[in-house]
Length: 147
Length: 115
Image 1: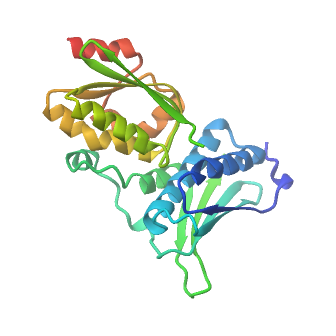
Image 2: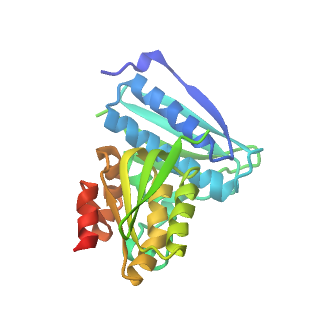
Image 3: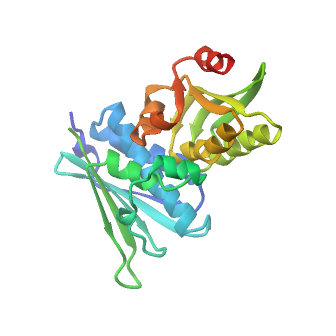
């Protein structure tokens, strides 16, 4: 059952530090649980947001904890949860990343490049909107349906 | 605060790592340096026990990708064991069961090295 009416729009402000990941997952898990997701759904949402934020913190903000980004979360028609990650780093469309070739990655001793693939697999929709003006932020939109 | 810890025990000629808590981009470097240390010490038979691990992201999976070819080239392996369903799901999403030996119990992993 959806409890979507209990929250409308929530925002978490986080900094470019990997210690923030725990707090980010907790925030997203609490909201997903409140919305009515199963434990499996809650895990998938938290994982996708963790992967997106890990990439952002490491590759865009370069672990600079003076820089901030936002995680916005809101229900969509009582049927889905929308999570938007807003940053002011260099625009990078994760949807351009090809699916990883595991054997090739192992041969190359590569430890990265899996996050985007996970996000695409566990979410129902993933869209990316690069900032188009100096005052705008890049926006990664993740959607997970309740059922 | 890091909610991850690991213990390391030697079992015969095998090094066993016991992971606990949450393995993410923040805590993965701790595991990476522990495994690097074991390999540097000449140990190429590694078992990673996930029994007390509650969460893993791709940063954790990446640690095993870094070392797997190296230990296999030396005649060893990194065997993964005792994962909770939630943790296994992440490995499965990326097709890791094709590349890694994942067992239900630690004894099975150890027995495979002994065989």
